[in-house]
Length: 108
Image (cartoon, rainbow, N blue to C red; front, side, top):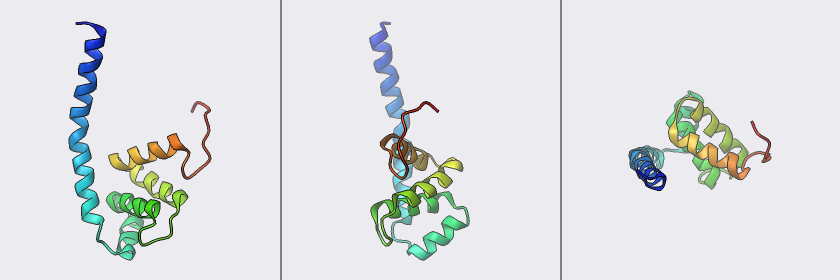
């Protein structure tokens, strides 16, 4: 098998594996979309990773709260530390784009 074909197959397999994760994240977000902010904050402070992620999204978009990227990054970090895949992905985007803190190009 050629190297090019191997990479294409690996890429397609990766996309196939990531699809259920994306659907799961959308379902989780839909569950938290209509929750009042006070209840969402309480769940986030009690360590519920889904609530932390949803609160981060609300802060990011400014829905029901003032838009605050730094605080959103804090909640994404807390959810990501618990293994929340969507929060880990969003936090990676923040690091890449330099959102919520100063972007550095130094190796970790």
